[in-house]
Length: 265
Image (cartoon, rainbow, N blue to C red; front, side, top):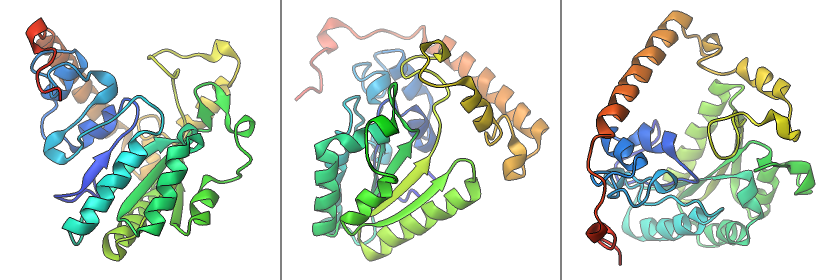
């Protein structure tokens, strides 16, 4: 949201809750959609996996790996013809890089000089399979560079450098009307689907999480010069706010059978 400008477009990935909340002016329509309620932002038909915020041009997210990337590339082609400074951002995980449509989109964005920011969230996993078992690439940015795309990198372990990478990438794509690629090192705290931990499956160690907690804003706010008491107070406030909102929204009407095909084309 920090780099978002009126007229820009966004395409998220699987369950883009944080993205939707970060740009939305109202949380309630998103919560209602999570609960599959009739008053949800998509009438309860999209649910958790396909959140959108149409008022901010987050029109579409998908649970199908990599499919947001070619959609965003098409949007970038439109923005190139219709605007002088708007861009599209697309987020995807490292597993999506193995999809042919992602590589095709990288190539096409470079050939057509499209104003798009590719944002790769690299947690080193494709569900349960680690990177070294899936790819011979040392860095995914090497792939983008092979298509002559300007690349940037950063890690949640160093938020100030990561912020600078975002700022530089967005400035470049916005002013030069060319694609950029940001490779972000991150970590998945819980299981692939759900809210539980899956250490018992044996494909990763809990020690990895303990290491990442040292750099987490909630667990270690000093990493960005924030006061622990302030962070705890804010966390408690938002937790209470969302609990109350979920309880309130749970009482809203469910969709009716007649709503099933409304706004479906």
